[in-house]
Amino acid sequence: MNQQKITQLVETYCQMGCTSVYAIIETLESGMHVEGTEDLNDKERLTLTHELKAIMSVYQNKES
Image 1 (tube, rainbow, N blue to C red):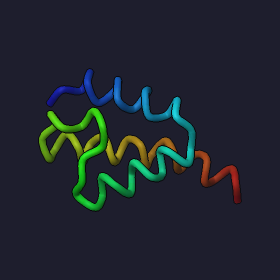
Image 2: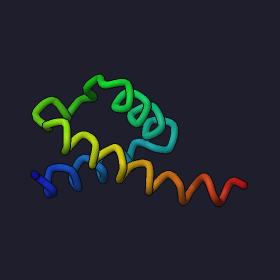
Image 3: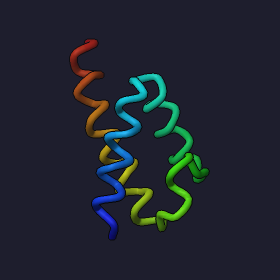
Image 4: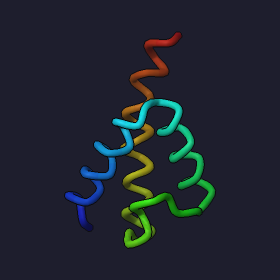
């Protein structure tokens, strides 16, 4: 697993803002690719999705 690539993508996507990250999560969960994920395998895309969701859960808890 290319954890360095996943970490880099997480950082890049998070800089785009919450709305973009939510859209990226939705796209990945639907089985589609997002720019930068074309070379990730299924396990890496799943890991990326989980990491993004974990980060966004912090923001969801603050909004409540």
